[in-house]
Amino acid sequence: MDYESSNWIWDGVYYYPHLFGGLMLTAALLGLSTSYFSGIGVPYLPFSGSYMGIFHKRKCDKKRIRVYMDGCFDLMHYGHANALRQAKALGDELVVGLVSDEEIVANKGPPVLSTEERLALVSGLKWVDEVISDAPYAITEQFMNRLFHEHKIDYIIHGDDPCLLPDGSDAYALAKKVGRYKQIKRTEGVSSTDIVGRILTSIRDIKVCKDHNGTQGETQKESLSKSSNMAHFLLTSRRIEQFSNGKGPGPNAHVVYIDGAFDLFHAGHVEILKRARELGDFLLVGIYSDQTVSEHRGSHYPIMHLYERSLSVLACRYVDEVIIGAPWEVSKDLITTFNISLVMHGTVAEINALTSKDDPYEVPRDMGMFRLLESPKDITTTSIAQRIIANHDAYMKRNAKKVASEKRYYEEKKYVSGD
Image 1: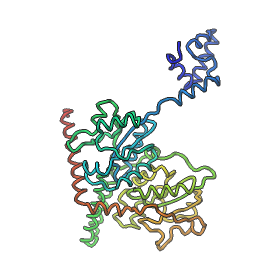
Image 2 (image 1 turned 120 degrees about the vertical axis):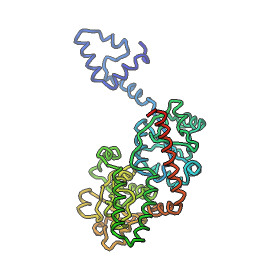
Image 3 (image 1 turned 180 degrees about the vertical axis):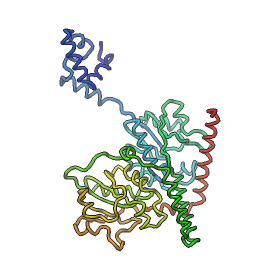
Image 4 (image 1 turned 90 degrees about the horizontal axis):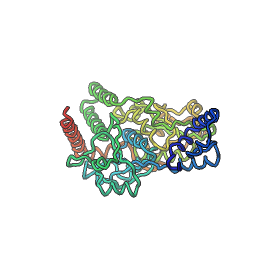
């Protein structure tokens, strides 16, 4: 029997050496000739050094599965991160296609973030291996062939939510037709459309409160609105585990600590976290509670809730661990508990702790372990919200268009299925 025809036996010897060793021992005890096993290509000693090199080579030569997932990834949130996490789990290497600004305008309406900003966010995710920055909105036959041959893609991935072209057709019809399409589950409770809606609603509520001199009735209405958004998202320990690195700092690790709201996670956040991580061996990020953010920024903030913000930060490749609901003040106890070596704060921040009456960094300053880190970008949560407000009508139209197309898609799907 030749080598290739007994592949299953060789794989068995490699992956289950103890089982095959047991079979060999049993055969010897029963007086069976070991020549039978050598006749089918199995060595007498499964742990023989000369053969282990072959086993290792066979394992290393195994083809790595490359999967592709594309998207606009505008206003990056934990739903995007979870989708890419699921996509990576379907293969060994994840290639992400980033749809260009021009393509988004033609098919959906104006994006909030530029291509450069969206590229920084996608590249900063821990599950992403490569990025194609000029991906089309619809996968044409030409682009699909480019994926298969130039980028060696095995499967094209998308969520179970509809992705429709302006004419109502399925953007992934070709991939499905050739049998190279795989589907993941959409993360419920958040979308870029939803976030745009939250921002516009928040601005409307601020105006209403001003008109009514901030009466209690309007404040209660706003709180109910926030609670309604929160009800769509329930964090579980399993989700945290999926996003976490699962590793703590080493015994002599240089732990760097940086804290903030990290609301509407953006490219500025990615870049400052990258710089902070370069200054140590382990990056610990403190994420303020909703109450702390509201106290220092106003009752209409944060736009994203604590658990949503925590997952967005955890998904970043430069982050090792987070403190969910971190205290405003960096105390001696916090420093000792987490063995922190360096405390950092960026020069660009919505909540300017440096001008606060009560300096939250007084303790690390006195200990000589505080450092001001130059922010690579001047992007803020407010500047992003202002872009949306400035293009209010266009985004309202875009949101309405998406809701209508999805409603039509599900109605047609229901009609076809006969439900």
